[in-house]
Length: 406
Image (cartoon, rainbow, N blue to C red; front, top):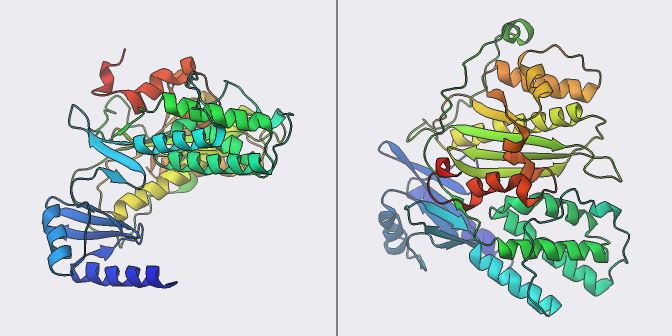
């Protein structure tokens, strides 16, 4: 019936309330319950449940025996919303969409009568500009295939394959009227994914070492913004469990689109040593210099950092210190930490102050890193294999301690 979904949602909400869980303010479908000095969580997606508990069997037995729910495949997580979960030889929990990629390859074969070409080592050619393509427009059948594959790859990105995020962000701009060249590029992306199907997100729980980062305070922090502090929600649960450190990397690609002049912001968020979120999107304004586009990227990153830190607090997670924000544009980093530059554009001035106030409030530390060590490059431009492999290997392909990578 039309209302079956919402009736189930209401019924299961009543059950969770009776079991002592409450919906978090981070997300309505993440439910939390304190048990001794830890929290238990139940995450629901319609009728798919993920239980995070030291004694998940007790939760499962309660749902079965007290509420007569028929739970299928209840046990250690192995497959959820299109993604495989498993442990590697070191016992580290891993997430990889292997079965999803196999099905995607089968869809490709049905559409085009052959398997994807797996000779590519990057989603698109380095510095490619699909917006300049002048090949023939696709017919209606070709458009349907193109749109279908765009949808398939977009969910693949949601499952952790951020290495194709920039390529798909660019190609999805042509969904309404794609050309033959765009379809060939999309085929290349799928061929790359099939070749690199072993990319895996590993849930590394060690804390990163930032002991070499000086605890610097600046004379302008109080004089310009006053004694600003991070706004911490007063209705968040008491922080319990192991603490986390949040790191993030940002980058901008000037003149990404040759037709509109728009740049692209690329961001990768890492919690402890695990990549948890990413962002790749064209900027809302045309920037005429790298300085302006990098500041736009830094502002977007700060806003996402604040949202992530608030979400963690609503989940009862203790956060250690500020978020370590890494950028490879020294002028931008220096201007934020020891400001001297004159800025004339209004929106860049606002980005400038947004980042600086976050530094003054202790929300972030802005650190300069070399460009060839910034993994946000993966989400900001069309890259080549040699350009990003050492960073991509550490994030998605290395099993064991990443400090052992040559």
